Amino acid sequence: MKARLASSILLLLSVLAGGAYWLHQNTLVPVPLLDGRSLFAKANPEYGEDAALLEALLPVGPGLEAFLATQSDLSLLEKTPAGEWAGQLVSELEISRHGRRWRITLKRDWRLQDGSTLDATRVAKVLGPEVQGLGGEITVNEPSTLILQFKTRPEDPFGLLSRWRVPGTGPFLRKGNTLIRFDGFIYGKAGIAGLALYGDPALLESHAWADGLVSRRWAWTVFPGHIAPEDMAKARMADYDELRLKGGSVWFLSRRMRRLRPNADDWTRTRLFGVWKGAMDLPYDPLGM
Image (tube, rainbow, N blue to C red; front, side, top):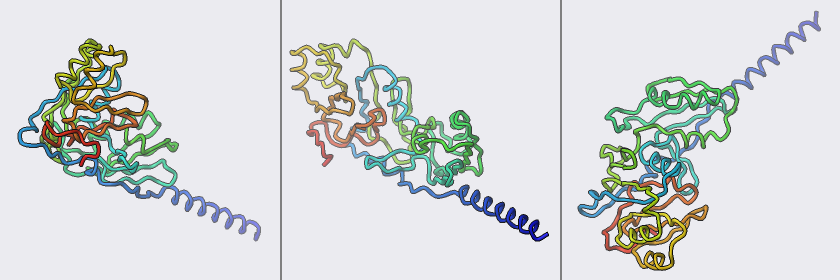
C-alpha cells in the first residue's frame, strides 16, 4: 500500500515537474528591438530638389528585383548598420524559450500605399504561405497582434523576419522598374520624387556607359567590367566617386547623392529614403558631414 502511494506521489511529482518545465519553455520572452524610425534618416533636400526624378543603371536580374522590393515593401525587422535589430513594421516581438511560439505586435496607424492601415489580418495573409512552408500556423490574436506556432524551432528567426516583406508598406510605390515617392509615408517624404532604374545591356557597353557618366545622367551605376581604356579615362574624370562593395562590385556614385550609403553586405537592401541632402554643386562627402 505504501509502495503504491509512493509511486503515485512520484508520478504526480513527475507530471507537475514536466508541466512546469513545459510552461517555462513555452513562456514568451520579450526581444529587445530598436525603434525602426532610426533606419530612416530625415531627408533634407534644398529648395526644389525634392521634385527630382533620378535615373540609375543596374544590370537586370534578381538583385535589381530585390532592390526595388526593399524600397516599396518593408520587412518586419531590419538590421541597423551597427548590427542591431530594429522593428520596421513591428513594435514588439516575443519568442518562447523553446523558440516555437512567436508573438508579433505590429505598429499602429501605419499608412499603406493603397490608403488603408496596416493590420494583423493583412500581414497574416501575406505571411501565411511562408509560415506554413516551415510547418507552422499563424493566427490573428488582436487587430495588431499575430501568434505564430511551429512544430519545431525555426532556424534564424530574425533572418526570417527580416526577409518577410509586406507589399505597399514602404516610402516608394513601384511601377515596373520605376519608384515613385509615397507622400503618405509615416516618417515623411523620401527627399526625391522618384527613381527610374535601367538595365539595358546596350547602356552598359563601354562607350555608352562612359558617355552616361560624362553627361551626369546616372545617380549611380555599377562598373560593367570590360571598358576600353579611353572610355575608362573619361569615366574617371566624371563627377562620380568609386565605392567598392563586398563581393568585388564597384559603384560609380554621383556626387549629388551625398547620403546614399550602399549596404556593403547586401546592396539590394540599400535605402533610398533621405539620400538627397545638398545642392548639386556640393562635393561628395564620404563622412556625411
